Length: 302
Image (cartoon, rainbow, N blue to C red; front, top):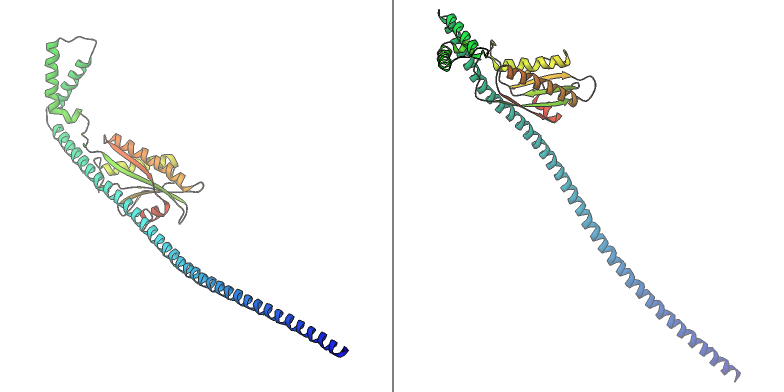
């Protein structure tokens, strides 16, 4: 009986161990299945991440291409913008040059005709006597210390008008054109080849040879004389580049733009004084031109 009892105990323990192993196996199988499912989910997530990374990489490549295209478009736009600005400045100067040439031609014609009429009157024998009579009547009419009867005043006024019709160009100021000389005066500061100030405008060419009826020459010399008066011998003699009259001055210290503004003010003042002396209405407009544009329009050899 003792042996049977031991056998039963051993068999019960064996069954218990088998059940425990069966449960452990099932638990491990479930764990394996769970890990397999988790691994599959992670593989799916990794696959999704890889696809997302590929999409992001494609987006990055596309974005880089777009950035490069935008950079090229920006460069093209800047080049086109500079070209448009250069063309606009040159167009303004060309228009000023044509308009100024018309006013200068009218001025020359009026002054030449006026001078010819003066020479014709001076060649006449009775011109001197007529001028003496004119000035005597003029002085008599302006004399407030001696009253003049109305009839005598009317007679003297008529005689003065008759004499003025004969000797008008000898006693009257020279005629001036009806047009207004309008010009845009541009100024800028350049660093190459050395710092210097630049002022330019579209002024018609001077006549050859120059004479008192040459309006462009009078304006040019007036502007240059004013610059020399203000800065001494620093400003170079004006030169022409493609129909543009250019004033230049080296800059030893300070910003070239500031010196260019001072040079512009001096040139503007001198030209306005010269125009006023010639009895020509003149309107000058000053504008600042960017250095990169000025380097193309104003620089020598451009």
